[in-house]
Length: 238
Image (cartoon, rainbow, N blue to C red):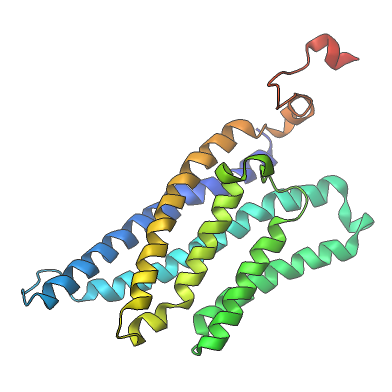
């Protein structure tokens, strides 16, 4: 493996040893928080510690940052590889500056989203963070699998990131709303997010098998992926 191939493994490695375990912890605290709330409403003395709710929120904030961060990391590698391969800093320097600006803007918007207190600014920074991910995902070099968008690691990942961003933006409304409408929306969206996380694990594993190593690219990309055939050694030499 070349150095570039090891760099490509940073994204899935962080997902395996940090993001997915963190998701499991957040789900566990979410379940504990709900059980404690139901027991309290029923007048039963709960054995679940009161801190479970605060821990769920704190770790949920960490999970959102981790999901957005790993999404940006997953986009940074193919975009950067395409820039280096085509030497875009010479051919299209404005495009390179724009890409760097979008990465910085997306991270800054996420940080501001954590600090925003009013509904208006939370909506603005959540929209900017989501827009940044989408714009970066449209750049050349990103492995999107547009022909199978419904089972694409990229599209499922973007959808997951959007749900996490929206969930973070509505957290204050959950505590203010006495009708529990926002709490129900939060629960439904995060149940969908769990299914998307499962899809991410499956599609990510598949893509690791399909994306060739750097020294294999010149041959693999000559294959016909529709008919699932590759050129013979004699055809390759022509």
